[in-house]
Image (cartoon, rainbow, N blue to C red; front, side):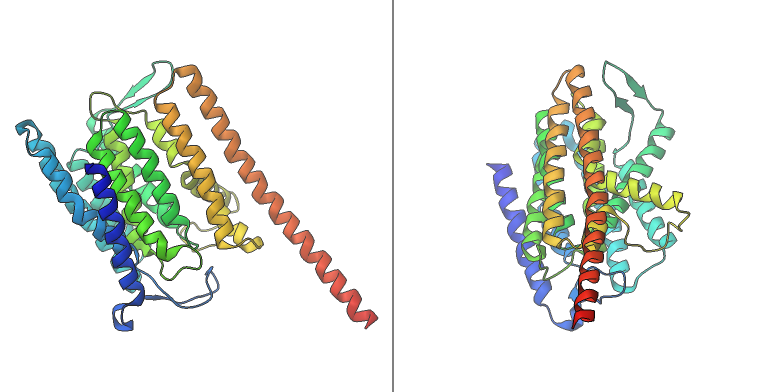
Length: 365
């Protein structure tokens, strides 16, 4: 009943606040004006992610209250309080970038501070569990460094993937729901409730962002979602009586991690400057080739749902089954990559045929 209540409240709060932001007076809005790199054609309000932030943070005290009856949980409650400072920092970084655009270094330093706060609150990698009983254990320093790389990396990856209508909001909801199943199934019920809050907040936002979008998420939303989910993944896989395997989290977040990593490697091989803006992510290439925002977003929803299910099954399966899941997941992502290249070639071929036919008609005319 508690989880259903916070799910409903988070969705309603996010929906109402995002709707107000979309209709707010122009003096209160920050508009995303189209340019040569944009996937939209008209100025659109951004910072809709504030609705997600407001819904999540407003309901955080309910999770805190759940911890208070047991005296032994006061330490955990204090950690949640520290975590709120991390949320405030990452929100501030995204909000400032939405309002006035800050440089990559300043932006990363803000994310770094938020990641350090998360480590201080107890989100730290201490071990990775691999199939067949293999476990890699880390000291505090190495674990803290790995955690910082993970938190800043995934929050940036999520930010990179917020480029078309409906993509980040819908995929964020799927990620949150899948991670909540892993959290609840491994005894991390509080984290599971937090994931449900995030899922509902994303859905409330998505009602205004699904193609054609009335408002964009902005960095304030994408950085926040990526940071929170990454931190929850650390806690779920490195705390409690039954930690979940980190590979399950990688599977759940697999679509965005794969797309961003594939694109970065491709750009390095092409000797492109990584800090420069671009439109070469797999989802952007599909849009450029002619697919609608709706179709691309729905494709990513399907991929994310399948990998999310794989992550859930992986968590509760035997080692042999886990190997099969990893092979099938890799094959799925490889097939998707081949599909993107095939679609680009087919679209280019169709344009050449159309141009040739148009030229022939002009000559005959």
